[in-house]
Image 1 (cartoon, one colour):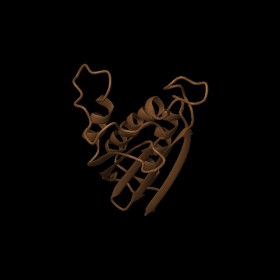
Image 2: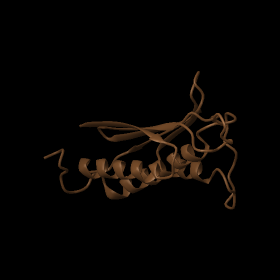
Image 3: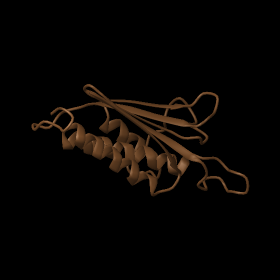
Amino acid sequence: MSILWSLHLRREAASVPLARRLLMGTMETAGVDPDVSYELSVALSEACANAVEHGGGAGRGRPYGAPTGAYRVTAYLDGETCRIEVADSGPGFPGAELPAASADAENGRGLRLIEELADHVHFGNRSGRGGAVVSFDKILKWKDSPSLLMA
């Protein structure tokens, strides 16, 4: 079984729970274990929140950081793996390595949380058009009862 969806969302706070609910519904329908679904949804929420907060540059007449543009969320369930990608059009990540986030740091904790919740994580920059890309995947576990898609 494979499921693929992609959303183009405005950089607004209300877009974060929308993406999270769609992922949770997809996971539930596919029969993914609720604990795995929850971990992926938290990681997705962090990636989306970063895109909303940092994913756009200064637009015409707007100060840096003001909501402009959109970002893209893609989720792909294929066999035993879920892969999620969040891409924005902001300035991207400043260097090859992310700065270490301390427990009381204002920034960086969400990226570290994504690393803890997912099996494989990649933080990078989009080539050519600019912007950051956060992609992560996780090996899925299944509920004991059969899913709607497996029946």
